[in-house]
Amino acid sequence: MLKILSTSKFFSVFVLGAITLMITVAFVFWGIGPKDNSNITYAAAVEDVKIPLNEYWRIYDNEYKKLSDQYSDPEEIKKLKLGQRIIESLIDRAVLQIAAQHAGLTITDNELQKAIIDTPYFQKDGVFDQNIYLKMLDLNRTNPHAYESSLKSDLLILKMGRIVGETSELTAYELKMLESMEGDNKKQLTEIFRSSKSSQAIKAYIESIKQDMKITVNPELIS
Image 1: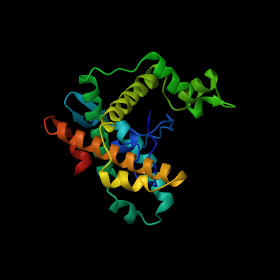
Image 2: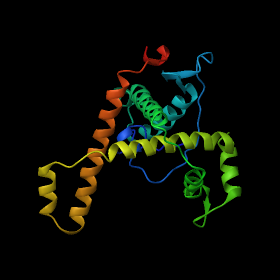
Image 3: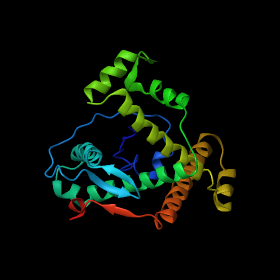
Image 4: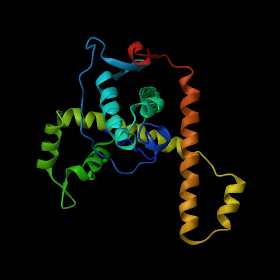
């Protein structure tokens, strides 16, 4: 699944503004730690879409390990409200997925296949290797059907986010600033402006439709 959580941008995958701008599909090892109550199987629900509790903990565990490399004091990590941020971003993903389905968007077999063969974790010397693919899935306690189903959802969210993000426009001030620049600086600043605008548009879109959706969160995660 698309679970690259950049420590430099903090939750870059599940903050929707960033997930819609990613080009490379990456594969992250699943590390599910022991949890207290196995009777509750969801972290949150958006309408009829339930976010699995083990998905929440996978992300939490992975992100906590990364943050532990940055912060020696656990109290500093606590201040970041890791769990709350993950829940919010997972809910945003679910909202965007539902919107994509309502819009009639789909992921074709060719799109899915390209995402898989372009994933570096499944390649040998830059070329997709079927044996490596199956071995990696096995090591991560999943199978092609489950992984590809999950990946399809991620790609659908990515597609919807891109469509929404493309509706954003640069301001007259930003355009004027870019016109005064040349070379690589202009190219980099243009990408920064468009990325920021796209993220803002996606977040605004999510918030606008979220208001009319029924959203519930596992009480144990917010207590």
